Length: 184
Image (cartoon, helix red, strand yellow):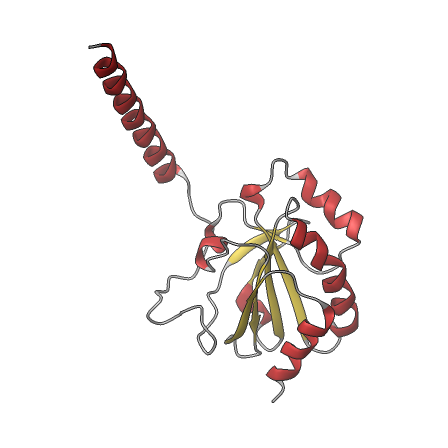
């Protein structure tokens, strides 16, 4: 009889937790994203990149579509991610060399997964990063781009089309090769 009572209590507690979780999800307002479906906008090479609107670390509102006409490396990362820390100096060096060559890096921090927002600013200072750092505080853009494993990067051409994606850290030569492919 005692085991049956414990099982019933556990099931009841689980249902309460599920109801609370569902109520919290409904209350949150999503960040602005373009209303598209995977039928017209996928995540594979050749498809249009999903537009999104996020605030950067310095409070500026940006949209992916604002970068049409440029080649974009869209990177998803977090401060606690060792491979992300590994690629950041390479990304900064690449950005310094290519920012005047019609190339932009948007390094979307998955801020919802950070323990403290201040860590992002400290990380940016530590690595002396100068490219835009949009903050995905509600995981809307990360979900859109299916950034489950990080770092995840998408290469987007001047017309807003995805040319490639990469899971894992990137180095300078890899980014250079991807940008060169876009020029063909």
